Length: 177
Image 1 (spheres, rainbow, N blue to C red):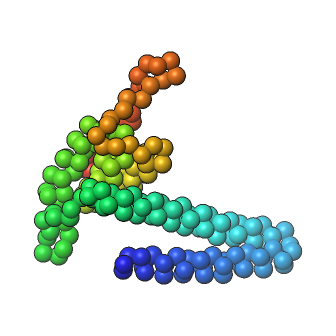
Image 2: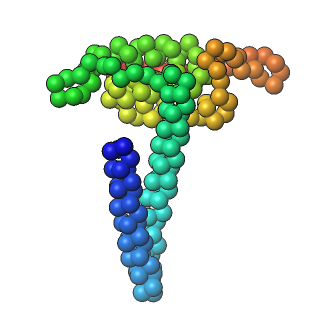
Image 3: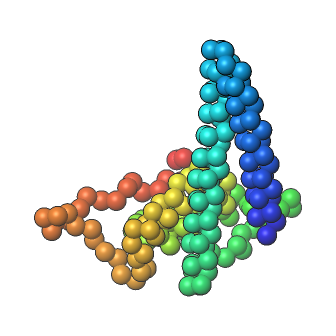
C-alpha cells in the first residue's frame, strides 16, 4: 500500500510539473519571435514525452499487478522466504539459488506467462531490474496473446503445419554470465 501511495504522489507531482512546464512553453510561443517560438515548441516536447512515459509505466504496473493477482488466486505466486542481511536486503546467494530454479522452469515452459512472471520476481530479488522488467514484459505479452495453462505446453506451428522456430533465447543469469 505504501508503494501505491508513493507512486500516486510522485505521479501527481510529475503532472503538476508537466503543467507548469507546458504553460511556460505556451508563454514562449505567445511571445511571437522566432527564437521564443522555437524554444516554446522545444519546451512543450518535454511534457509530452513525460506524459507518455508516465502513461506507459502506469500501464506496465497495472498489468503486472493484474498478473500478480491472477497468479495469487491460482496459488502460484512465489513465496518471499529468502534469507536477508541484517539491513533487510535479500541475500545475494539466496537470490541466485532461486534464480537458477526459476530460469530452469522458464526454459522448460517458455510459452507460459507464469514462469516468466516468477523469473521476473527472481531477477528483481537478484537486483537486476532491467532484466526483471523485460521478463515481466514477456509475461504480460504472453498473457495477452493467449493465456496458457501450465500443464498443457503447446508447440507453435507455422502456416504450413510444421513446428515454428524456437522461442526467444533462454534467459541469462542476473550476473550476466
